[in-house]
Image (cartoon, rainbow, N blue to C red; front, side):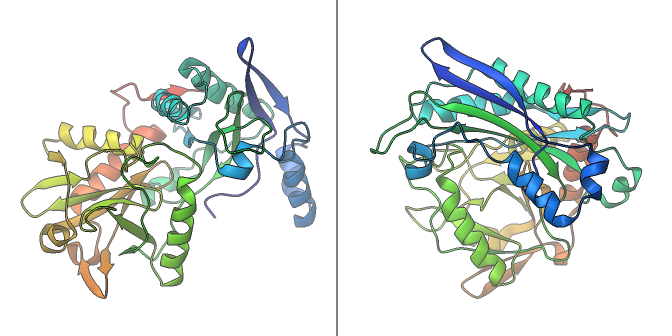
Length: 361
């Protein structure tokens, strides 16, 4: 399973008040990692539930009642040299700042965000909670690699009337994570649901955006697909993004296309990194509208990108019973190259010439 509700014991908690932002680190109940692994499953779950309880935070608030919240997702990745490093946390910090500002919250300072993420991981490492690099991961393009998932999120003060949050908390929790997509299925479908509308919150990593994603992803999975893609809300003809990832199409003419950013598409950090890596290799990259008809007629490769997805190939796309197969159902050459390059940088098997990795230990 990619995600599990099994937080590491040290969490960060920041609070906005009259003096601005203040923060502290909390150490939740725990044993050693070895002792926890030896516990019966029921006791493991009980301990995990204990670490997920915060009795001094309000249940009825603008987050639980109206979805007034935003979050981030990033990873600390085991390095080949034995260390741990975060991938581009400054970019997550900037997006979190924009998200909070877009929801009319006092935004969390970017430097504090990076420090909180690094320090939370470091404190858990000191207690023994961390994954170690496994050379076997290299044989499968790191598809089964472990890492530390870092989830910063906002949580509103108590409130019952429809309103915005003026004194939010920011929490940073971490947990072990493995591969996001299940092996053996790389087929996607176009959903009839609408993820975001113009002048909405599609550009914000708002918690409320992910309700539609959860429903559409569930429906796709029930129908036998690994992922679903959305069409635009206005014309219902242009591809926008996946349930929790950005999407790329490599056309027969040699153009790599990803939908242009706007207020309905989340600006992914992996997306931006892949664009830069592709341009470094001399690939023509276009950020523009791409219609479903063009994809069916011209695309020879397709892949999705995201913190959880990495760069994952998509073998086929189905819409209203019509199906297109990419690269004869096999991972394309460009897709594989970009996937291997970004994974190599992230796990330390390739040099980080761009300064993207921030060392933890």
